Length: 362
Image 1: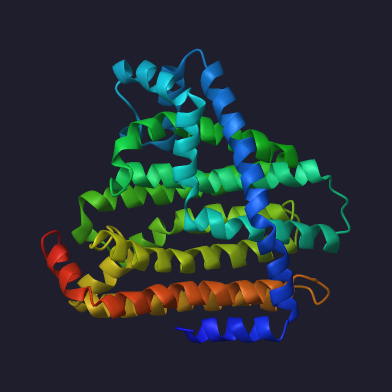
Image 2 (image 1 turned 90 degrees about the horizontal axis):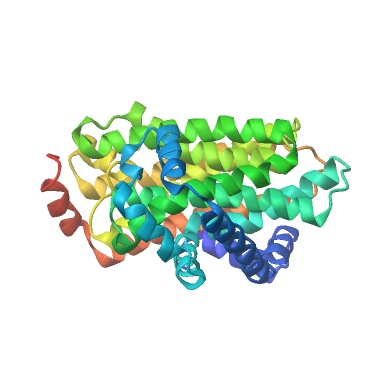
């Protein structure tokens, strides 16, 4: 009830409108299906780790591909870490930690709905095993951004960052293996998206050491990681076949960027400081005022969401999950506005301004 979008959601629920019913169908089964996904993910990851005869070479290859030496480990630590995360209970704990992510949790039912909608529109008969494998692969790829961000940001799970570093290459390998089951076109789309995501991650990392150099252009570059990973997941739910592939890419990419704005607001509340880099940082420096910076960030999130709505407008008339996607964007709008309202309710602007002034001149 604290946001206009939230009230619209309640109206959809009370009137049992089609978008809500479709959303509810996927959402109510998500908890059980997510548990099953987690089991599959954990088993695959454990198998990869314990069967690797040369984890040092595996990690070196990964850091070279990423172009990020900070994702690596000192060689004398690797055997000890491998022994630790080879224990199923330890690995399960680490996986649960990185799966506890808004992007992962919010995206899981969405990919299932997109896949089913595309299969019906394209008149494809796809086995449940193939469906699960492709969705698993893209959720795992999205999940990879969590440990990588935590390693670079050093703002949570600091006691487990070395474990995440060794897990990363195996997570990527599992994602690739699963996504490849969709065929060459689907794998190619993933690799192109992942390349763009790496560029975004590289810009993000560089800005952390020079936050005063933040600009509109390099913030757009940073957000490549949201656009690329989320957009590619959307594209491949249509098996990279036009026109749905391009429409899904647009909608998921822009919805992902919008959720990114909400995440930055939520992170500021949790951590008591503005993330570097982020839209709140850019707008705070530009306007000279932290409160104004967050007001402009929520506007930026709305602008991304308007672009996501364009994707819905160009969907074929007989695409049956259109109302689902309209309802979905309502939940994104509510999510962003909720955290912005919470930031105002807690009146954290003086603290955020003080912490920012200690880092960057505003």
